[in-house]
Length: 170
Image (cartoon, rainbow, N blue to C red; front, side):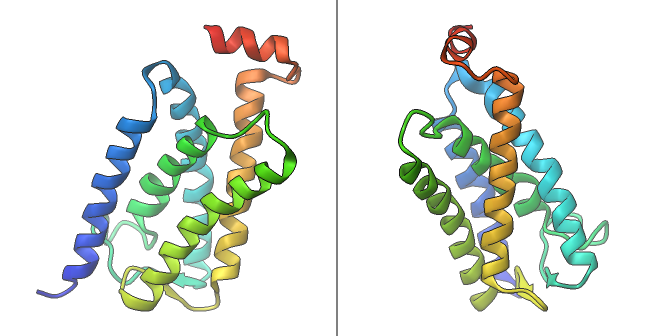
């Protein structure tokens, strides 16, 4: 069967990501996860479409919306946003800056590593005028934007401990 590996990877991505969301998003944090998810969806969908339309990346096999657009619906619209929700929920806000940087690098490296594997061994993605370094930078940057938005949305411009504690208690 043609593209069997690609189909298995995409379906597995939906299942694994859904399970991660169910297991890692507590009921009292669903709003926070949803805001992170939707914000990341917007920015990755836009960046994803730009990269594809500029012919920097190509997605030869897509399980969903094959004729609607050339981006990967599974990864741009579901997997990356879901992982970003988890990223924001477990962000080590009260830890030192080195740990925060490592947290960004860990999450970004997981996605980039999967993408490099997919680019090398599958038809899910092909780099045209792109490399894993650009993926790492853009994913890191979108996580950073998402974190800024998350903090602004839930803590406002006054991110004092008192304000944060009041919001967390709600």
